[in-house]
Image 1 (tube, rainbow, N blue to C red):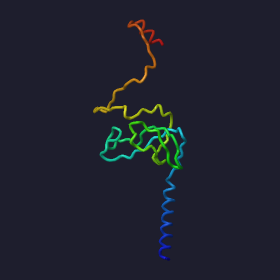
Image 2 (image 1 turned 180 degrees about the vertical axis):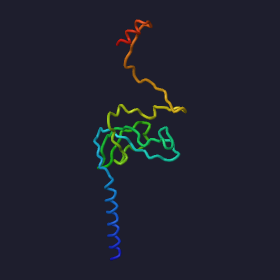
Image 3 (image 1 turned 45 degrees about the horizontal axis):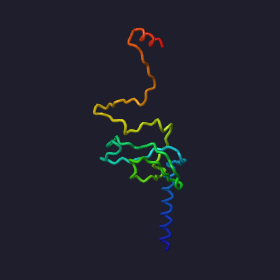
Image 4 (image 1 turned 120 degrees about the vertical axis):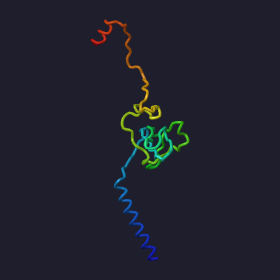
Length: 145
């Protein structure tokens, strides 16, 4: 019995020492409902994920809205229909807070890069419109303003 007791004590000491090492590096993250977060995806060599392969695979995807907090470290996210096969509940370590307005973030899937490492710019909205005549007077008026 003494040997078993000694083994348990040593295991407990080793576990508490390792826990203290990991607690130093751990960040206390906490999110509220209706916060926006990025979801961490782990890259797998040779697997095509979110349109990219290899080193260029996305580390985080999103942003996604937090619907509900479950327990102390689990959160339920509002995922799009194309990710319906993924379970919507994630650990806090898989999430990263979105800084700024999530509506301004352009999804990576919409940008298609060709072989020349360039992409076609597509206007989202027309912000200003100017209709003028093709005369020198119109050009002069335009340059004055």
